Length: 601
Image (tube, rainbow, N blue to C red; front, side, top):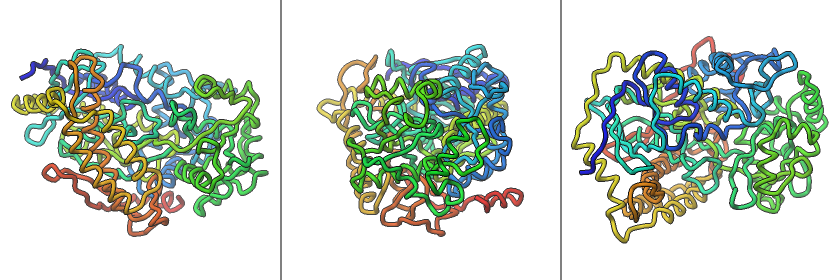
């Protein structure tokens, strides 16, 4: 049996993005012996790619805002499938979490009177996103990691978790390996917080970084925790489409928040053709009204008219771009044009959108101060994930917590832009608090050595197998299949084909072989990731097949409308003797004091 090193902690946080760092800060502050393990390096988490801002009703840019309006917008964007308690806590606590970040040293953009500035974003009634140019996630990570490294917490970089362990149905630890040395490490922990993000690398076109292989969701499901709302995948409407080497790279919604417009190949502003009935009262009906909004916002005034249709929710905008492309009105490389050059001065663009300016200049040789960008939908975010309790982030397995994108409940069927960064802060803190409180009364963890030995044997199988599948070929086939059959629009036939393909792909994953040693072996790392990617791909496909309607981030061509049968139902996926099973759970009843806001939404 391979040797391993053992570590003991009260709370182990898996993932060092915004949610993981905030959870570890809270846990350590409460006196729990805390450690953070991460796949990548400290400061390299996918949170740094979040550009537009963090949503919170600070009321700095428009004093008409309130937590109640933020709650209503979140419920409306989520098509009423949100866990209302999570949406309530998020809307109420987000302002304090942003101010806290400011106290810890975050350098936000400022209003003329020195307050944190806020910008408009799709689906938000008022300008609500606290931002740092278009590099907000980077500043958040910088601030949080600076706070954490000055606390009593240990950090393990380039460390991948492969198995969770339980004793008496309670979490007790996990097996990891160092990506640098290939050595195995056993972490015994009273509580574990999953903060591993999403699983966009299951799709061919994605804005997600290489770490996003659904590890947390797969680890939780294998350990007996429940997943929820996995059918809802957000395809961000604006990712780069050219050149192919950078296809899918995110183009922040902040471009549209600053007045950018979407045009088809004929130069026509097409979003006015795709305004859903439910949003008729929220967005401008004419270009004249939309231009008045842009002028008022650019002048620093409170907008007196409705926002442009480019700031509809992401699911609507993504489907609209796809419809234009399918109708033959797309841009040369299969997307649409996003124009900010004719809407703002070059100085404004470079000041407000510095990352976008450099991104297009360096990657596509496009000067966005002079010419439009080519953009198209890209797999961006998973609304579904581990089912958790709102107050403390605990999953259905005792001692296992989750926060951030890996957790479900807050966003319902569709996430509003900017809600993700404040989600990380609000529920990262709550999960860290919940884990530390749980650890106070939990017994010392003990892990079965035979289970550790079996897990190590599973991890080494691909290295000892000869003549098996190439992990890169399997991954490409998985991505292409998911993109084609479980992508932005779906049908029953394609989803059934996907389930059959996943059965075959799972066999291929079990037959992967890798050459070389364990240290610095990207093929071996991918072989590990494929096991997680198969789990989340199956979860997404099963849930999408069961939901016979279109809602939010789930679009069925064969069922294009809402169906009241599914309006108050979350699909839960659970582990039934090693097989993935599905059931429909009724949504929790909304509290009486919040019902008026939900009905308004």
